[in-house]
Length: 512
Image 1 (cartoon, helix red, strand yellow):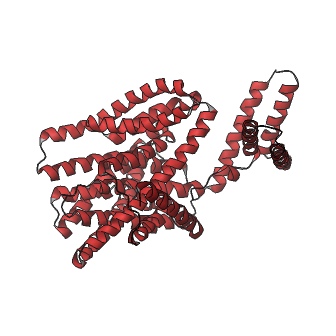
Image 2 (image 1 turned 120 degrees about the horizontal axis):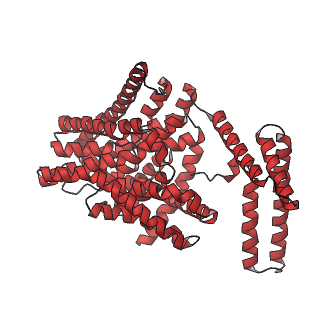
Image 3 (image 1 turned 90 degrees about the vertical axis):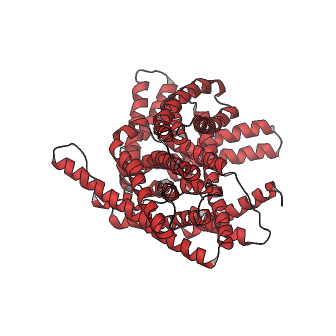
C-alpha cells in the first residue's frame, strides 16, 4: 500500500471513529488512540512513519498559533501569577517528582528520568477547553487553563531538551546551561520581531489563498528558525502569533478571517487526530516487541507516573489557593478561587499532544526508550479517559457551570453592539438610514427583553425567505438560466444571509 493510500485509509478510519466518539460521548483522542492500536493490529494495515524532529514542529506549531490568536496579551498580564504557578512551577515540580519515580522504580539514569518527567509534565488543556466551550465556567478558570497550555509547553520542552542533551552527551556544562537559560527570553524577543515582520507582509496577500498559506508558513518558520538559533521554539511561536493577533481584529478583512478560521479549525483538528492515531500505532508496535516482564515493568511505571502527575497537580492547585487566601488576609486585592473551581483546575490535567510529540522525538539510543514511550502513552490515555470523561459531570455536580451567565454575557454584548450602531446612525437621513435603524432597534429590543417574540418571528420569516430563494435558485440552475459562476456567487450570498439570521447553534461546527 502506497503512502497516499495509507493516508486515505487512516483518514477514513478517523472519520468513522469520530462518529463513534460522538455517539458515545467519549473524548475523541481516546477513541483515536484506541483506533490506532486496533488498526496497527490488522495484518497488512497501513503504517505511517514520521521523523521525530519533524513531529514536534508539525503537530505543535500550528496548534500553538491557533491557541495564541484566541488568548490576548492583556489576559496574560492579568493572569500572570497563576500562569507562572501552573505553567512553570507546576511543570517543574511534576517533572522532578516523575523523575524520582523513574529513578526509584526503574533505575533510570537521572538525566533520562528527568527527560521522562519533562515528557509527561505539561497538561494539554485542549480537551478541557473543548468541554468548557459546551459547559462554560468562570472566565478566570477558563483563562488559566487556556493560558497554561500555551506557556507550559515552553517550560517542558526546555527541560526536555536540556535533560535529553545531558543524557545523550553524558555531561551538562555551564555553557550548555547558559544557552538553555537564554533560550526563553531570546525566543520571546525573536517571536515579537518575527511577528512584526509578518504583520507588514500580510496586507500584501490579504483576501488570497496565499494569505492563508502564509499563516501556516509563519507558524513553521518561527518554530524552525528559533530551533536553529537555539531559542525556545514554543515561546517564539506563541510570541509571534500574539504579536500578529494584537492588530488582526482591525486589519484583517471579514472574508479573510472567515476563510482562515475554517481552514485552521480543520487542519488543527486533523493534526490532533493523526497524532493520536500514530501514537496508537507506535504503542502497539512497542507492546509486541517487549517481553512479558518488560510489559509488567512498564505497566507499573505507567501506573505510578499517572498517580504522580494527578496528585502533584491537585496538590499544587490547592497549595496555590492557600497562598492566595493568605495574601488576601494580608490585605492584597485578589479574588480567591473557590474550592470547587480549584478542584476543577487540579483535575483538568489531561496530557496530550506535547507529551505524544516529545515521546516521538526520543532517539533510538535513549535508555529503556520503549518503556518510557509506553509509559507516556499510558499517561495520555489514562488522563484523557478518566479526567476528560468526568469533567462535564464534575462541573455539573459541583454546580460551577455558567451556561445562563454565558448566554446573558452574549446578549449584553450584542445589545452593546446594537447601541453602537444606532449611535453611529444618529442624524443620518433617508430611507436607507431609517431601514437600518429599524433593524438595529429590533435587535436591541430583543436583547433587552422588550420584544423577543417579534425578534424570533423576524428570524423565522428571514430563514423562510432564504429557503424560498434557494429553491428558486436551484430552478434557475436546472433551467440553465444562469451560469455556474453566477449560481455559486448567489449561493454564497444566500449562505451568508442564512447564517446571519440563524441561531448560535446553527452556526457552530462540531468537532466530530
